Structure formats: structure tokens, C-alpha cells
Image 1 (cartoon, rainbow, N blue to C red):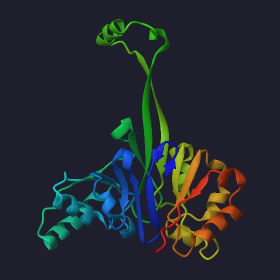
Image 2 (image 1 turned 45 degrees about the vertical axis):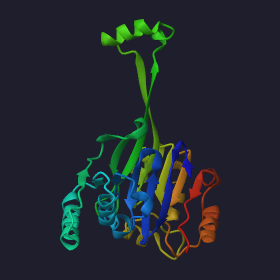
Image 3 (image 1 turned 90 degrees about the horizontal axis):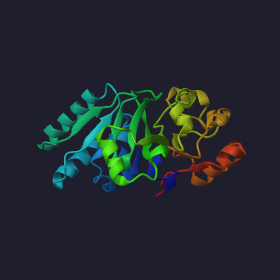
Image 4 (image 1 turned 90 degrees about the vertical axis):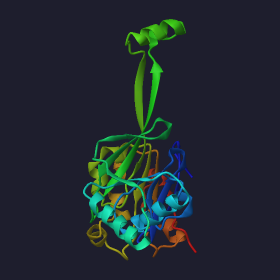
Length: 274
């Protein structure tokens, strides 16, 4: 599917498995049970360490080694790298293999360069384990008006002398929330302003109360309705629905509860059904 200018594939059922593939950026977010399509991704970002998001890490690492691919690079929330190293070390002892990889923490606000000139920035989220979300910025430059129409040789000489010829701009293309409470929306400007937003919405009706959703570190649809005026995004993909809801129920509840101005921008990323 396409959200704004970014192509992605999402498979997400709360408590069972979540992964997001960003093929044009050669990047994945979370690994769930490590589907074969994600073995090609040498970089994986993890929102948090729950099994339905991180269980596939050892399998992903081992599969790349088995196929003679480069050692992968994993980005985990601040403070979690030591535990992930321990997980890998236990699997190395069980597997009698090396499982080569790099595990990194990317502090909030620090930038990482990606394919297609994109920049990645992490931000803190509100879950019941250490967690993070991701913002993706596109970079572009345009020749300043005073230099337009000048010969290329002149421009080359100016550039050699250190003259800044272009105006550089960036645009916030996509934000991914990961599992989080609604505080992320109210406190993180990047989430509200990204052109496209992937935002978790695990619970949708009174079968699970807002209080229980908050206790488990998740967002309830009623909270999204309450804060509908904060979403400035062009398109919002809601994901991570509980398996208790069918696709028809998800659509019906979104239609019934979301105000029209928000509903018209919301895409429901339905859980896969066997």
C-alpha cells in the first residue's frame, strides 16, 4: 500500500505478530515471527521488546548468516541493547552458531541516514516497557534564485569557493507510533504533523475500557475520537487491532465513531485472517 509518498506493507495483530516493511528504504520495523520477505532487510528498527514485535530477531539474524548475507543492524529502544545481546548469546549457545549482527541504540533526536536521501529520527513513546517510535524526513535542495540561469562553469567555481548555492529543505513524510498510549499524540509534534501516520489502535469498543487499554500501554479508539482535532496528517493508517475484532467490525466501529473529517483520512490496516 501507499501512504503519502512511501510504499509499505504492514501485518499486525495485537499480541500475535507485528511487522512493517518499507521496501524502498530497505528497512523493516519490528519482526514479529520473522516472515521470509523480511530476511532481505539488513536494517531493522524495533519499537519495543514484546514477543509479538521482537521474537523473530534471532531467526532473522540466523537466516541472513545461513544465506551468506551481510550481518544485520538492529536498532532497539534506549536501555534495551544489553538484554537483546543476552537473548542473542543464549541463542548462540543453543544453536552453536555465531549469529553476527550489530545492536544499536539511537537516542531520541539523533538522525540516521537512509536510502533515497531520507533521514530517520526516533522519539520516546508511552508503553509498559521501554519503547520508541520513528519519524522519516525527506531531504531536498533547490538552486537559490540568484544563481538560477547562470552557466554551470560559474556555479562550479562558486561551489569550489564554498558559496552555498542551494536552499535545503526537509519534509516530515511518515511517523510510526509503535505500541503507545495516547500521550504520544498529545506530546509529540512529529506524530501530529507527519504527512502520513501509522498509529496503533488496539481496542475499539466497551469490551475493553479506556482504563484497561491505558494500563496495558495501548490506545483506545475512544481516545482517538476525543483528540480528533490534533491529527494534522494527510492520511492515518490505524493498525495493531485486537484479534477480537473482525474486519467488518473494525470498519463499522470506525465509521460509527470517527468524525467525518478524520474518518475520510483514516485507512484501517486490517489484521490478516486465516
